[in-house]
Amino acid sequence: MAMMKAWSFGLVLLLLSFYYPVNGADNKNSSLGASFIFGDSLVDAGNNNYLPTLSRANIPPNGIDFRASGGNPTGRDTNGRTIGDIVGEELGVPNYAVPYLAPNSTGKAILYGVNYASGGGGIMNATGRIFVNRLGLDIQIDFFNNTRKQFDTLLGSSKAKDYISKRSIFSVTIGANDFLNNYLLPVLSVGARISQSPDGFIDDMITHLRNQLTRLYQLDARKFVVGNVGPIGCIPYQKTINQLNENECVDLANKLAIQYNGRLKDLLTELNGKLPGAIFVHANVYDLVMDLIVNYKKYGIISGGSNRFSASVTFFDYSLKPIFFHVGFTTASKACCGNGGQFAGIIPCGPTSSMCDDREKHVFWDPYHPSEAANLIIAQQLLNGNTKVISPVNLKQLRNL
Ligand SMILES: *[C@@H]1O[C@H](CO)[C@@H](O)[C@H](O)[C@H]1NC(C)=O
Ligand SMILES: *[C@@H]1O[C@H](CO)[C@@H](O)[C@H](O)[C@H]1NC(C)=O
Ligand SMILES: *[C@@H]1O[C@H](CO)[C@@H](O)[C@H](O)[C@H]1NC(C)=O
Ligand SMILES: *[C@@H]1O[C@H](CO)[C@@H](O)[C@H](O)[C@H]1NC(C)=O
Image (cartoon, rainbow, N blue to C red; front, side, top):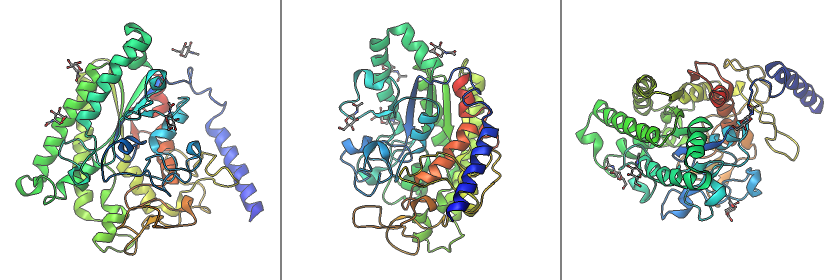
């Protein structure tokens, strides 16, 4: 077994040197200025800790593999790093983007980026009402407007403009809650589904998002990456409450996501044509996560020793073709941390939940969110992947533009 591991590690290193012929030589300038992160619980790094809300993750065992906090919970809804954290690291940002609402996110602490994401948040203001409190995307952008002014103070207005427009990346990971915690929850929310067809609701979402992305552009954002909505019908929560089999997903939820995703792609094409100097990168999270869920046995990460997940290396090449099979995920349906039903998908992860022993072998950390292992795979694809996954350029290329 040990020999097997050493053998495969050697091969992976070999492959790595193949994909990165000279370390770092694939770009002229390997440092990104700042990472500004907008979105929901997939990328929230602790904003909800400062809100009176039912959507919180600052309780153990969340964060158990997050090395920067020594395994203590930070408000991230996963066992380790979010996709936003990993992408920032890989693009050369020295620190994780700080949560906007943290009282010490002031002065120079904001220079490497700010995170506005909020668990439960969505494109529409009404989304996530069930949690009592959360930051919707309108408010997240109001907050960036404040940050924008702070950058003028910190760097002077001309340097600030350059830093924001040329050396910073704006990522937007949002939309899932507009379905899960709005459209598909008509009684508890605004009754959207009773009065609106899917077409009408998705139209509204796109109209809002067009306006929101345009506001960021007005505030000098130029390099954007916008994720589409993942296969929300396949999360353990949906599979559990609908009493599905292991390899089934909820059709309506996935159909809504696919319909929205088609409109999102068109919107980004439209904005690329309409807003001079801006580039909107489309991240096809849906296909990426769906492939991970269907072919979970073929994906895996290196883990071992005391530095869990220290090698942010994935067992696939960058055309979605798996290379190594032997330490693949063991499940893409059961949550590692959670309780209820056959997929542990009803009660969120907390101190009294049961937790799996092999966290790096679960695609889902809790009933709603991917594990750090899954986040590593998704992030690597966004950073290095081809146009099936991320287009017109990947994130390494976006940084170097
Ligand atoms: C990288 O970017 C920084 C900041 O704009 C600049 O000072 C530096 O000269 C650049 N390095 C290269 C190799 O282009
Ligand atoms: C802000 O405070 C938190 C909690 O004490 C700490 O973990 C974090 O490192 C601080 N951030 C900055 C930028 O100083
Ligand atoms: C959403 O809420 C924000 C902040 O409260 C407000 O500024 C904005 O006008 C609202 N948007 C809509 C469409 O109601
Ligand atoms: C930013 O805030 C200022 C007020 O300080 C306001 O006039 C402006 O319209 C805001 N910009 C955006 C894009 O929201």
